[in-house]
Image 1 (tube, helix red, strand yellow):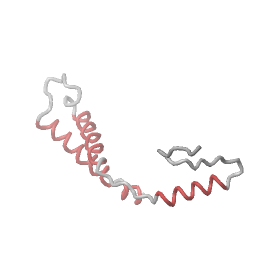
Image 2 (cartoon, one colour; image 1 turned 120 degrees about the horizontal axis):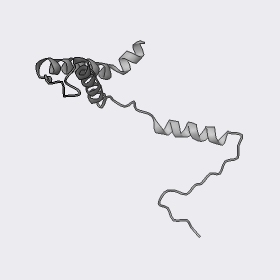
Image 3 (cartoon, rainbow, N blue to C red; image 1 turned 90 degrees about the vertical axis):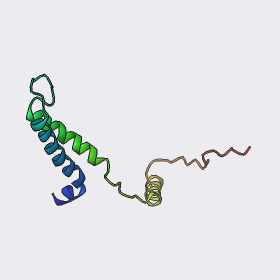
Image 4 (cartoon, rainbow, N blue to C red; image 1 turned 180 degrees about the vertical axis):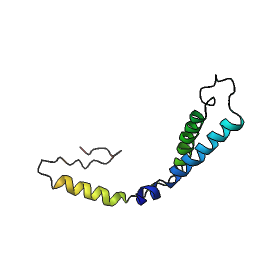
Length: 99
C-alpha cells in the first residue's frame, strides 16, 4: 500500500485539492437555478473538481529513467536464444544497400 501511495502522491494530492476546490466553488459560486449540470449539486461539483485536480497534477509526474541499452540487449538475447528461427536484418535506417 505504501509504494502505491508514494508513487501516486501527486495524483492523490490533486484529487484532494480538486475535490476541495470543487466543493468551495459549489458553496460560494454554484448554480442556484438547478439548470447547471455540474455546479447545481455539491457532489457533482466535488467529483468534477476531484477528476480535474487529479488529471492536472498527474501531468507533472516524473517518468522513470530506463536504460534503453540494457533493455535492448536483454530483448535481443531473449530473441536470439528462443526456440524459433530468427531473421536478423543488419540494414541501418537511412542506409543504402550495396549492390
